[in-house]
Image 1 (cartoon, rainbow, N blue to C red):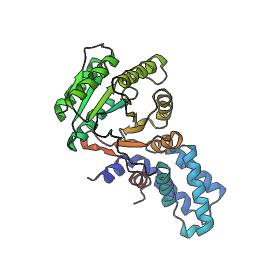
Image 2 (tube, rainbow, N blue to C red):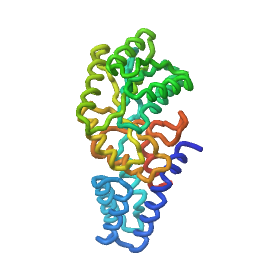
Image 3 (cartoon, helix red, strand yellow):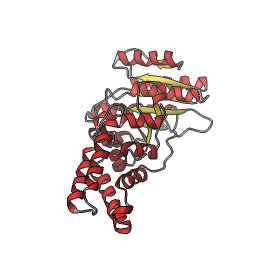
Length: 304
């Protein structure tokens, strides 16, 4: 199954109701009326596209209707085009330091898939012929260290770890030192899951980043927030608070397989302007793929 087909499968619960509802509404009348616009608005909001994106789509539909008439306007095509435009054409590639170590901090709340994502990203770089390492900086949850080591063994990625309850900033410092000495190109730092509402935990994350920067100026070069796609717009609050604390550079959306809340990806990017870099639609390493705005929008609306 190709990645586009996996996306369509992942969004089946969203698109089955969304595309059907849109077609039902627009087929009833040759005109865009206040009534059917209101119904279209409700359908888009139910798909977790958010208010701003919903209004952008409706505005574009009105403009298309005024210029082309009902017969020349396909609402689903208009919606997919607006989502693609909103998500932008920013490259999902991680920003690599030329001829030097690139440090990527992977952050998020518990249960979003940070550890798995860190391992899959490291594996992706190794597959490209670029040596990578992992840092187990979730030191407060013993299972997290073991989980990362198991992923490291499975994917043949070296893992730097400390003792249980060790200072995560110290582990990050040592991991950068090890990565520099081994001349690897990538270090992915698996940080502890933390609630975005806990100021003390967010302050600890800031400390980890400061220590990284002292050991290697400019580090971390990327800060990726991992969000559970099944949580819908609840993920937006997480993104807001993490972005305030550590200046996110990208988003990774996991667990899109089986979710009915795919539209939340659009709402988050629309409000915060943080590019979606990778999305996950399965458990296998290759199921974490670079984000493609057009494919995402087409799959969301069943545009092709």
